[in-house]
Image 1 (cartoon, rainbow, N blue to C red):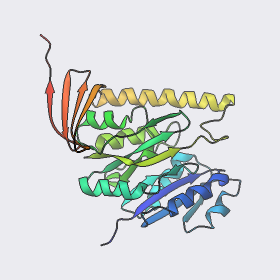
Image 2: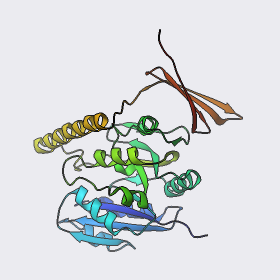
Image 3: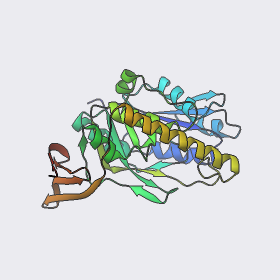
Image 4: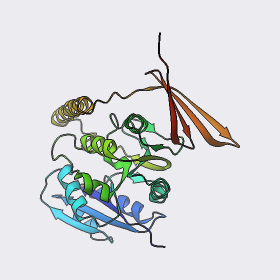
Length: 283
């Protein structure tokens, strides 16, 4: 049986000291049908030379920013699925096996992994696999409005081609891309046992402390929040926050999940699949 190919797109800019570890992490995956695309975005260090030591597709270009680099990588990808990975991060060794397994079982356009974020010192870990179809379920479960990182997702390439989705080439490019993808996806599946480690690296753009970096981060976040608000209004979305979650297990296996939202509605899931909703009416 032919396994589906995954294209892993890695933009890199002057991050040679972490790139080798990132590539080796991918090469050690239990899932082997991988195409690694390294987009060298005008690096002046040894990033290109390091990438050349490995079985990767290397693309060298003038510095244009991470959004441009991801678009270039996406255009060159030949896989059935695409994963965007940062050059200084890591994933658990069964990451792609678990993500593909979830997509194949559910027919989802997007799989969303668990995340350990060392920069914020917090995590977004799923307790079970859930198939999400309704817009508010997709947004609530993935928390894409706050965690808009594109590297959390494995995208079906034909889906991205169909909706003609591209990254912004300036500002906070992740969030608009991820929000639109999640909204337009027919199905999204959460994958608790696929874990992405968002590393806190000294000297990265995210951790830089100079005034220019701080100002750019602040401006990007202001733009992202503006996009988020306009997107919600345009699509008439009102994302509800959960108040309580109850899970019913048989022999330790999660069977039924009940989620109570602050909008007076209760949703029930059987083995992670939405089955029905109740709404309370105050009189």
